[in-house]
Length: 318
Image 1 (cartoon, rainbow, N blue to C red):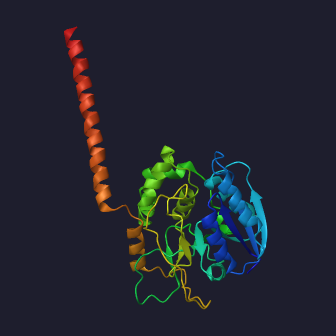
Image 2: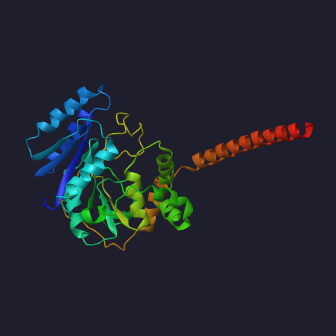
């Protein structure tokens, strides 16, 4: 593994999941692992937090640098702080969370992509995850380019992360700039709902801002064609993931370390169409949402009309 790259694992209170991720990482034969362990949120999960810390302290198959948070920083703050820390020491970074199980060739795949696109500034993010979408039978490459990043086993360069900032004006700019809005929708309009949730304070996400920084600059992200990361966190155990099967994948079983990587200008229209469909709000939900908003508007309009009549009636009596 190149010393240019720092590998990071973020853990919290899921020992069963963490054990599987560590087992996968061990097969990658890495030399060093940075680990950031978040503190208990309310003391009720302290037993699980301690169990996770027992697992990471007993790693004997690589060098570790463990950072223990005594208080709960939350996933967003932990990841941003951890990525900043590691990228001050390394030129590139590979990030795993405690529910992202890597394949045995995950790190070598990421390193191959890092090396190939090191000086291609339009490429800002790499992921070993493979969306469960249809890839054309005649597609010959091991990766494809898209307009938004994925965070199930991902990586980036220092040169790209320098553009990251939690700029709230980006969220508002989507409604003000038709061009920017079009770019966001091109990447899948589920992102719009996440942005609205962020504005309302319903979520606190670093990932929304990273995606928007990439999209605004018209940059690209890499996804693996074959699944090199399996997310096992959609079982209801995670703080931010509700139970669902949409993102279910297996893990690649056959690999030889020889990756066929395209030039940056080779975007595949069919894959981009499938990608957008996967990350778009289903039509039925869009219709129900519009009807719901219309009913709200009509209800408010009726209340306003009733209030206006009441005021008018009071004035006419005087």
